[in-house]
Amino acid sequence: MAGNSFGNIFKLTTYGESHGNSIGGILEGCPANLNLNLEAIQKELDRRKPGQSSIVTQRKESDTVEFLSGIFEGKTTGTPIAFQIKNKDQKSKDYSHIKEIYRPSHADFTYDKKYGHRDYRGGGRSSARETACRVVAGAIAKQLLQDIQIIGFVSSVGEISLEQSFEKLDFKSIEENIVRCPDPEMATTMENYIKSIRKEGDTVGGTVTCIIKNVPMGLGEPVFDKLHAQLGKAMLSINAVKGFEYGSGFEGTKMRGSEHNDRFLENEQTQTNFSGGIQGGISNGMDIYFKVAFKPVATLMQKQTTINKDAEKVEMQGKGRHDPCVVPRAVPIVEAMAALVLADFYLLQKINSEKI
Image (cartoon, rainbow, N blue to C red; front, side):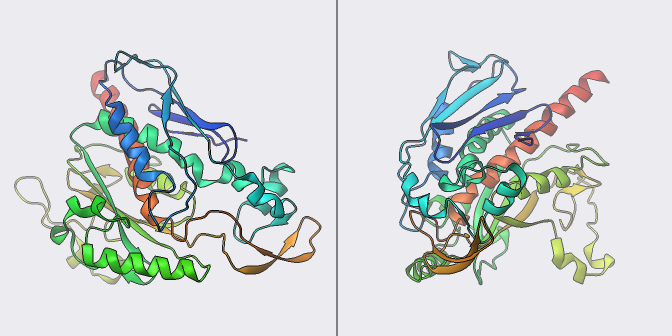
C-alpha cells in the first residue's frame, strides 16, 4: 500500500489499523532543540479521542501517546520522532457480520477490489482511528510554529448553520461545549439535533471552519505547490471529507470583481479578505480561513440493502459503537493537518531564505 506519508520536509508516515495492536507514526524533519510540551500533545489527542461525550462513539480508548525516539530530556534531537498509541478497547466481534459483506459508502468494496484482501474489523487501515497519528504530529507542528494560531470549530450540523461573522464569535467558548461550536446557544441546538438523529439510528454530516492567524507572508509555492492546494489536499485526505473551500469559496462566484478584489492599505494589509489570506498560492499575512465538509457517517443502526463478495443482494445493519456525527471530533484533526502543511512550508521557506 502506497500513500502512507504526508509532507516533504516535515514528513509524517503513519501505520496501523483500527483493531490492530497499535497505531503510530514516524515524524521526520522536525528541527533539533525544540522544547516539547508533552502534556499539550496529549491534550490535543484527548480532544479527538472516542468516548469523550454523549454524542460520539462510546469506544473507550485513553489514546495515550508513547514516544519511542527523537526526544531527549524534553527536546527534539533532530532525528526521526517515532510514537505509538496502543489499541485497548477493540470489539472485533462487532464486525464479524460484515466479513463477507460490503457496507454502503464504506471502503470495503474498493479495498477488496484493489488488494484482494481486507481487514474488516472496524475498517482496518481505512478507519478514522488512523487520524490520531495526525493529531500527534500536528500538535508537534503547532509547537514549532509558535506564534501562529490555528482555530477550528464546528460551523454547521446538517442544515443548522452558524451564520455569525468571525468577529462576533467567542473562540474561547469552543471547548466549553461538546459540539465545539463558538456560539453556546447554537451548540445546544446542534447537540440536541445530533442526539435526535442518533435515536433514529441515523447519522448526519456538517462542516468545520478553520481560521489561521499570525501567518507570515511568503509561505507557499506559486505553481503546483500552492498553499491553498496543499491545504485542500490535507483536508481531503481526512476520512469522510467531501469538500474544501477557502476564502470567499463558492460564494465568491456570485460577486463582481469590483466587489471581490481585496484592496491594499498602506500598512500592507487588505481592506477585505476574500482571498482568504492567500494570493497566487502564497500567504499574504492576512488571516487564512477555510471550510471543510464532512459527510454523514456511513455506518447506520438501520437495516440497509447491499451486496456480498459474491455480488448477491443481502440485508445488513450496523452494530457496535459509532459516531452519529463526526464533526465535533474532527476539529482537532483539521487543525492538525493545517499545522502539518504550514510547518512544511515554514521549513521550506527557512531553507530558501538561508540559500539567498
